[in-house]
Image (cartoon, rainbow, N blue to C red; front, side, top):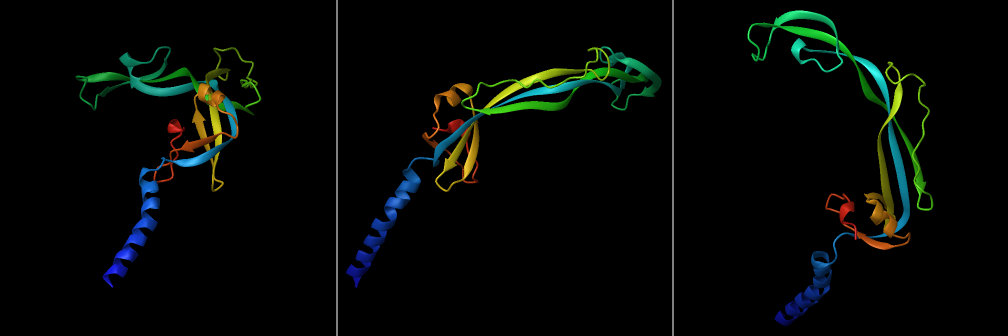
Length: 182
């Protein structure tokens, strides 16, 4: 009987140790295949808008046009006695929408060229192009068929070929860590 227990324990140990060792000591992440490489260019389209605000009259932003003034005490206590509080308007550029273009590995990235209003640049309602950004993404598929997109630097994006086998670190919550892709 004791020999049977030792034999059963030995078989269980031999059967469970390799998977346990692989799980603990094996390579991190999951095996993935590079399915596609994509790029995306983005440009903010901004509009000049007349905005209103309120501040202490001696701290107005440059270019502000005072609409009204009134005397009041500073609730924060930073000013002694009564000080002037101003209602003002000013022109400010604000993001209106985001123009974008997308493409794949065989295409050269191109910036979008959206149609803008033809108003002079100092007139409310005028539009201009603002911040630009370009993103390079890898589309990866794991063994279960799940697709993941990873943003990577341009040089990394250009150095990989479709069909490449890679390892993608994934944490216990299922979040992929693209910066550690190898």
